[in-house]
Image (cartoon, rainbow, N blue to C red; front, side):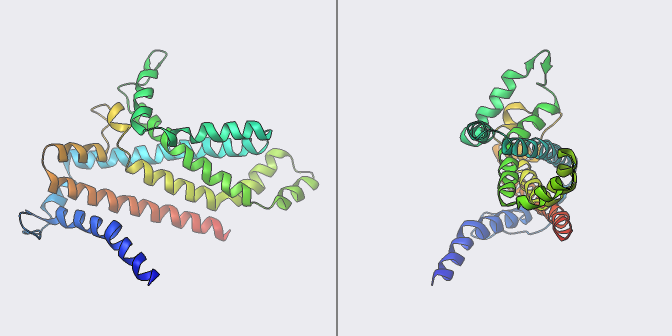
Length: 255
């Protein structure tokens, strides 16, 4: 009974809405209970022109922001392990702060903070990448912190007893053991960045428009079917990126 209820919830909450989006993306029109004139016209438009450029921007932003968040989150998690408990709690609170406030507030804050020299990022791609990095940083930090909590200290202690320096222990022992967690953190960061909209609409320049922004604009103009096709492409590309990162994580775990 419990399994049946769970299956029903998954069907209603996840599968049905996503299936509806895919069906709408393939529909030539939808005026009745079911879509009609199914085809790939909208999909072709989603993979050409401005929409294709927006998809490229989303991928570049996701991987750059995810990389920045992964490096900073890993560094912060490692540093927090060596801090006094009170300082570690402060670091944890600071790095989780973006989760506690609306993404629109993050976007507006970055737009105001980096709209004057010497840190003039407004109107450039870098403010979008920075916004995404800030928003996904907490998840990278959490994933690495959780992995560090599960890490057996015996490995580090054995390396130190053999005379390895702290840097060598980090590079040769700690980071290799963290590779599966780093892969998971990277996948989560990329997935979240690919779908981010709230902060992006506050900061993006016309030359660096992500696909979620284009989808929002299409919906705002009443082009719901075209927006659905773009959303289907976004879902597919995000899944492919996660599969790729998952394979890398799997190989790292085997090592």
